[in-house]
Each structure stands twice: as C-alpha cells, then as structure tokens.
Length: 200
Image (cartoon, rainbow, N blue to C red):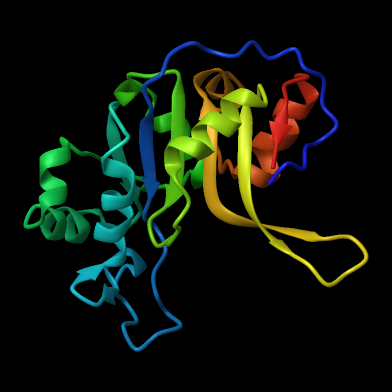
C-alpha cells in the first residue's frame, strides 16, 4: 500500500459514503480436482470461497451487490439462492462475450447506487477491513486503487495485484462499451491518459 502512479491530481473526491460491490466470478478451477466447478464455489471448512467473500463485505456495505460470471452464472445463482447471500438482493450479470473485468464494471453501471465501487475477484480471500481499504482510496483521492500484496527481498519491493480494486464511478466514462476491457491493461492506461489518479 502507499505506492502511487505518477498521475496528476485532477480527480475530485466524492462525499458519498455508501459503497457498491461488484464480484467477478468468471474463473474456473482447472488446476484443482474440482475442475469444471467455478472457483468461487470451491469449499472451505463450513463454507465456500464466495460465501466467505460476501460475509467479509456484508457488514460495512450499504450499496448494491452485483455478481458477474461467464458461463457459470446459472450454477452460481442456484447455489447462492440456498445461502444467506440471497438476502443481499444480489444482481446477476452474464458476461457472454466475454467483456473482461473492466467491461463487467461498465456493464453493471445500471445497478450502481453509489459513487464508489469495490471490485473483488470471486475467489479472492482477504482479511483487510474493506472500510479501511475504501477510506484509503478516498483519502488518496484516487479514481482507481489497485490493492496489492507487497513482496520484499528485492532491491525494490514488488507489488502484486490481489484482485481487489476500488473505483470511483467516474472511471466508467473511460471504459469502452465494446470489446474486451481489462482493468490493468486497458482501464489503467485510459485513466492515465485522462490525467486521473491511480494508486496501489
């Protein structure tokens, strides 16, 4: 945390305190004996990855919840309908093309109720306080924050993206409506060209 790209500070921080959540659940666990099952449904003791993720995000979040998957949406939808995730009023999106992570963020725009979106990979496990993560995003005045794991032991610490992002709604203006749109490969350069702040 604390590393920041060299981008101008033209971004205006929003006062809205609510947070929307977008969960990207497209990955399949081919590398495990659960091949063919969406990775978010892989089991943990007494739960699954997707349930653990939503429980982590539930308490502090007051906005909308959207889950975007490609090819496994009906399976995930049937599963979560039998869990307490069903109480979240979850919106489901099928990424048929696929559009990629940033494209999914653009596609969920009609469901957004807040000016800040917390984006999480559906199989990500994290223990940080999401409210602290959002507050850091807002404190730094970022349009987009890429949360990373810091790897020490080299001359320059290596930051590895964790699959967790915080985005202001204004970034949606910089995502194309067609074609594959990745966060790191397409969205970050687009924000850089627009002079918006990206932090890590």
